[in-house]
Amino acid sequence: MPNSTKRRLPFYRRAIYRVILSAQRARIYRRLAERLRPRCVISEATEDDLRAVGLWLSAHDASPLAPVHPGVRNYAAKSATRVVGFAQLVHNERAHAAFAGYWLFALQVRLLWRGSGVGTALCQEVIRQATAEGAPSLSLLVSAANAPAIALYRKLGFEVASTPALDAALETDTTPPDRRRIAMSRPL
Ligand SMILES: CC(C)(COP(=O)(O)OP(=O)(O)OC[C@H]1O[C@@H](n2cnc3c(N)ncnc32)[C@H](O)[C@@H]1OP(=O)(O)O)[C@@H](O)C(=O)NCCC(=O)NCCS
Image 1 (cartoon, helix red, strand yellow):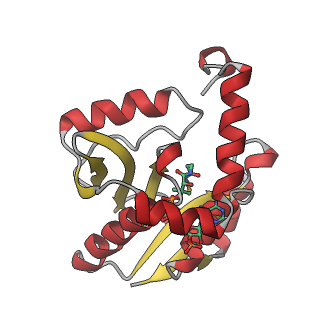
Image 2: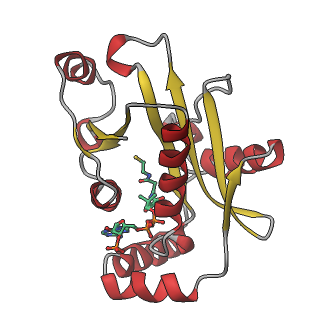
């Protein structure tokens, strides 16, 4: 998102966010969060859910959603009617060779819900659906600096993937160096 449209949070909110993010690095926080969080349900996102996700993500510097087409399935994690997490399964049939196949895309969990198992549940749903569609493997792109996401993906069996086509495509990545992305993949 261009800087001009990025919403800058007030200092005190950024400080609170930093404290929460740092607490979430502790396993004990995550075990407590898992026990205490309200029930949430994963299902295919409705149009209302997608509108809510669009508003939520546009307030952050997050990847835009893949455009809706028959190869995209959207999943929402909801507590009552509130969307607290989101992920996409994207089947690229005719994409550039490097990006063909099944991809987990746009995984996001709201800050206060992180560490409580929502991200895991969303990924498991995407893995389940990709398996049901006969996908041989599931791939994703993640910033090399995103330790929580990489830990989650490793826990679910993803490993860093490298093919000449992927490496060449990622070489031309225009994302800033501190957000350089790597590909990960897991067989299904
Ligand atoms: C990455 C993200 C989706 C993880 O979702 P989550 O709901 O917090 O993840 P879970 O609670 O299911 O955690 C599962 C595992 O992820 C890892 N993990 C999660 N948060 C972590 C943290 N803050 N520090 C280190 N590891 C973490 C742990 O291995 C954890 O398993 P454990 O608790 O048994 O050790 C979430 O942090 C998020 O929305 N981040 C911002 C958006 C983003 O980076 N998306 C990824 C795009 S590729």
